[in-house]
Image (tube, rainbow, N blue to C red):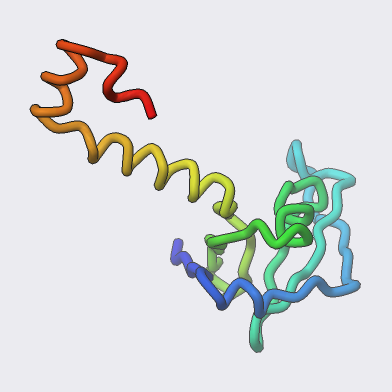
Length: 116
């Protein structure tokens, strides 16, 4: 299955539509559930009505959107990354990258020196 990623400022081009449809499926998790269509440029994609994406997009907290593309070319939300999560990941990465042999030696000798 192909995927499409919408990231950065392109996320600002995603628009919520008024179209809400019922799933045509008897599978668990879909039966009697609905999805909303969102537009992006000349495409539309489906998002399960219970997904956190709706609120995250409304708050402006969506950094990246991952869409799946089925054999008919229809798009569906697979995942999304919030700015909150991306910033936490980046902060953790910077902390991890700052660990050096010298910092480790200082921490062993005097851990209070590393607390800022």
